[in-house]
Amino acid sequence: MKKKFCLMFFLIVNLFAHTYSQTLKEVTQYMLREQYSKAKSSLLAMMKSDPKNFNLHYYMGSIYLENDMTDSARYWFMEGIKGNPEAALNYVGMAKITLATNPTESKANADKALSLAKKDAAVYMALAEYYLSGDKKDPARALEMANKTIEINKREMMHYIMIGDAYNENNDGSNAVKNYKLAITMDPKSPVPHWKIGRLYLSVKNYESGEQSFKDGLALDNTFSPIHRDLGEIYFRKGKNADAIACYKKYIELRDRSNDVELRYASFLFYNKDYTSALATLNALEKRNYDNIALYRIMGYCYYETGDMIKANEYMQKFFSKADEKKIITNDYVYMGKIYSKDKKDSLAIIYYSKALERDPSKVELYGELGMLYLTNKQFDKAAEMFTAKINKTQPTANDYFQLGRSYYLNEKYTQADSAFSKVIEMRPEITMGYLWKGRSLASIDTTLKQGLAKPVYEKLIEVGKADPEKNKKDLIEAYSYLGYYHYAITKDRAKSDEAWQNILKLDPNNKKAQEALQLNKTLR
Image (cartoon, rainbow, N blue to C red):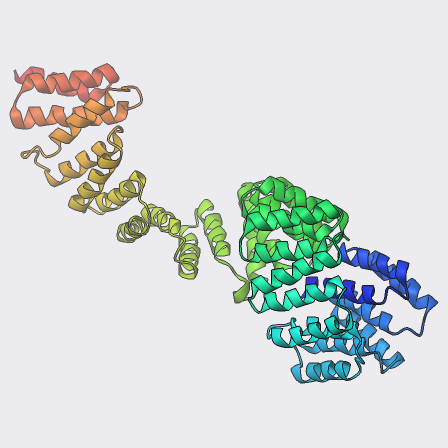
């Protein structure tokens, strides 16, 4: 609702500009740029010079409503009605305030305003905006009110903006853009129509057209702060985080200080991985007793990313203690899972990762995280279940099959392990890992070595591992050890057995097993 109030305020001030031309135009500019303190100062001065103009109370109340200060807004609207019961705009203000809490009273106030409108374009525009507010919007009624203003003044830019808004709210983008473009012809120097067109494109994810519209608006007025904000949103969604941060920084510089805006800025810094700067902004907000649960969320995220698990946990706990279930997003559970995982509190990490998957099954990477936790906790069936799910739901990697194979192997399901490690070899034939674990699996099936199931696998490992003996030393030693035992026990080929043990000594001259095996072979000759 906020940004629509800002546009509404701009319209109404312009409609009265013939009476308070310079001062009201200044208020217009302050409101558009979200410089509310300056706007209030100007309005107070106007009230002092013309205390009987109770329409001004509506403008002041709108500023407070714009900033979610409902009680203050209500005070100004009611004072306006007390001062002049015929001041229709203040009834629109009260209709807006009661829209969510008392629809009957809200409608009565809107009807009262309409009955007092007397072909006043400002009142019709305020009512049009009212019908576009709240959860149950009425675009048709808003369009009816906006069209009444055209009958009064066909040259006013903001009339076409409101008509465009009504069409846009009714999902009629073509007519919305048509009217926004008509607004440009009414005031070619204003950035507002370009801003509205850009926001429409932003809402339908047409980022290129939206970016161009915003740039067209800034070319007319580079101090128009909301365009910097919305252009920043486009850059953020396009992954141009540095540009998004620059836009938001400019937006903050141009408007009044706002905790909500600074929180959004901190979120941009977070997504740009500038966690230190984000925390500086967030800590300053906390010191100002900023009451927003998202503050604790982003602080928890940032502290995790900077490695401070104690504070990460502290702030995420604050977040969960204050957040309504509807406000919790999947990433909240994910970060809680990450924090507990880092703290080696695996059972808690499993709980939160599972909640994240329940909330959003598309987070398929969490199957891998859960699989590793189950592996660590020796819950091998569960681990295999998670890695199988990840493989079935994603483009699997060799590591996915490797971890699946380990889950089966450690659970003594060697046949399934062998199949998984075969996939590792298929995907990464140039590394020894797959051959090593496939060899282990086959050796565990063929415990007597009589079938020699692992022999060709270990021989292939040696062939591959020789490319970098130092890197693959440990795996090569295991493969040669198998062959040494195999030829000693099964083929009785002492020469081949000796060769295998001697190859181990070339890699590790102090290897006691190889030394003892060679000595044993020597005594048996």
